[in-house]
Length: 357
Image (tube, rainbow, N blue to C red; front, side):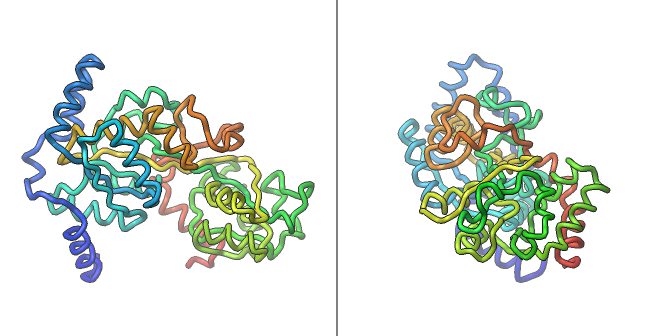
């Protein structure tokens, strides 16, 4: 890490994190504390969590939720647990990984829980800063949506769709297969994110490496506009800069469509979703309050609240704001899938689409 970045991270941590300086090695881990409670009856466990959370008084959440959504989320949680102050520090992407790693290496206790994309979740786990937590609410999530150890459970998921400008693409012309994107009429009329590595990895898994790379090379010859930012891409397609967004976050497409933009979506095979994972700090300063916040977030009440804010959630039985996104089963590009192959996938993607840059 260069000196400038190290200085930035140190300053950021000082101004945004309520850190302690207790040596990490001297503490029992959060997972160990909560595992013991998990052996009790549900009623006894909940009673002890609430009593000890009252003493802890607060919980710190390093969150990638949008600020307006985080406000509603905290208010809803506090209706059930008004005695817990939720400190939300919004941070995401690689900055989140570096900050947590910096704090952990320094023996600091900066957060109780965090949420992040699959790639970032894998990176945070590698730092050693996480502990597994088998929340009882995980029972309502399919096996494909959680890891066996208990490190990751989806806060929400983001289905990935093909977005198109309805003024430029007639309904009968909407691509039905990825192979349709190779047709001459789509040349110089599509956009793809410069870091759409999960999409690349999922298609190679679907086709097989050799066939998949051959497809990608042919697709790259379609003179695709390589953009950055899924929301920006949805905006460009809405404005008619390109007709098709190959792999867009459904949330971005729906946001613009609901505003009246000429934008719609369809699902291609393989259909996949990107999870945002909820995680417990290995040395949470407030482990009991952390457990209550995780349990509530994954509960029917918490997941319904997120669904009402427009998120797609993975918990079974929750009413979704856009049920059509879940009519077809999707493959979850989770940390255990994307993490180990991220470096190789990124290199292959750049070689094909951006000349190795």
